[in-house]
Structure formats: structure tokens, C-alpha cells
Image (cartoon, rainbow, N blue to C red; front, side, top):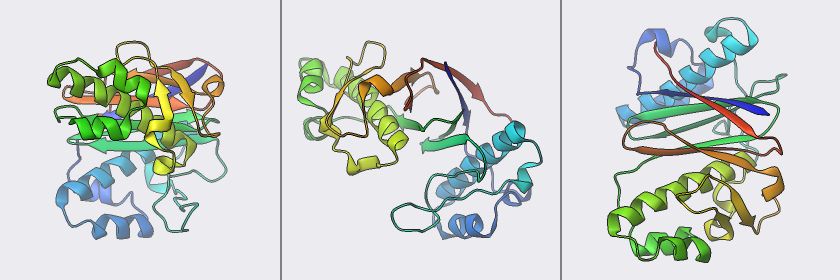
Length: 229
């Protein structure tokens, strides 16, 4: 059994008690965002990650230091990792919701999306496999959009878990029907093996869709919680 904690929060205010948790590189990333909402989303993700890490490993959030080196370019914008620890983290945000997924020892990926957008036919064709396109054919516009974001969050979650992101073509991944429990049916990329991939659709919050995935053979036990400062 793989235990995953998913912690949700609305964007936190830009306050000194949160800013002091950022190290020099993180402060530079924070200041590079031009929009305040983007600054708050980044800050909130780091606060969630550092408070949970401190709870798991001991110590204070202010003492937590991440290695966020990107494996492709070497810049500090990759997944936050805790040196010397098996704790694995994944951060996602959309709209007014920021989420953190945490587990031990296995790759994990979290995705959240606002669900009040429209999925036009070109987007469906771009992102869904032929089998998934067939599953949403005949649905009303509203129903098709809702189903689309079930598939989209599942795809983003598994791709984040692999660390390859959009290097894996979206159409190459097929999931169980949007109205069935989340399951990877097939994938053309060697990084995704249905026998070693588990995922779950999440409750998240009203107006959002979310999914979490882990590269493991064990069943997932996912706990969702709201973080309160």
C-alpha cells in the first residue's frame, strides 16, 4: 500500500511569516513573477512543501532546504527534492487552489485544473487518444468538457510522476473511461507501464478537477486535507 497525502490551500498572502521560509534561490524565483497571483501561488506551494517536510522529518519549516535543480537544463525550477530523504513531493496549482502531494520512496505526480473551462473539439483531438475520443463522442458540450478534464488531470499527473512531462505525447496515453475509477489502460512510452502505475481522481475543491499518480505496483491510499495556517 502506498500512502499519499494531498494537502490543499488557497493562495496565501505575501506576508513576512511565509517569505522567511524561502531561501535565496526561491526568493529570486518569487520575485521574478510579474503578477501578484503567480507570486502567491509559488509562495503557497513552497509553504505547503516546507511545513509538511518539517512535520515528516522533524525540525522547523525555516530550516528545510530543497534541491530543485532541473535534470534537463540545470536551472532551479525542477521538482523540489529533499537531499538525503525518501520523501517525494509534487506541487500543482490552478485558479485559486494550490496542492501538494507527498509520499515516500516512489515517484508521484499531482495535477489540478479549473473545471469551468470549455474543451473545444480541437483540444479534445489534441489531448485524447482515439479510445478516449470515442468515449466522449455524443456528449453535450458541458458533459464533454467535464469528461475532458478528468482525462487531462490524469494525463498530467502520470506525466509529472515520470518527470518527463509533455515530452510524452498526450494521445499516446489511454485511461479508463472518465466515469470509471482511474486506471492506466495503455501507454506507448516506456516510462509508463500499466502494471507499475497507479492513480486516483481527487475531490480537490468545487470548480476544480484533480488527480494524483504514483509509479508503483501497490494500491494507493490517498488522504486529502485542507491546510490551515
